[in-house]
Length: 154
Image (cartoon, rainbow, N blue to C red; front, top):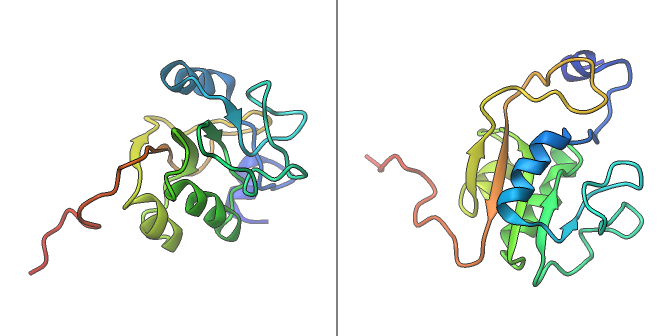
């Protein structure tokens, strides 16, 4: 079992429910219209897409999207890629901070405002706080960083 799995409990899984207090803070600011990566038992909003209704296949145009995507390198990439198209009125993804990951450098850093969560999050259903930092990646139309790096080239 991975260190992450050991920290979270006996059955390491890719989908963990967002703590309600954390979602409520984000929803207060952004007034979401749909939860894009939910299940019948953990949806944060009354309108949501499940694995079966496939939030990745749904149009995000005109939506205010909340998304706590399944974690895992190959699982996160399609969600951040879709958000980076900047089709939604706003899309807020609750993500692990992974500054060196390809998906982060390609789809988060150039396209999203990143708001770090100032504490390690204890996901609903987990025994311990996550062993990694988390953030809200906030995608809004017409936003793209002029430079992919704040460090000027030599």
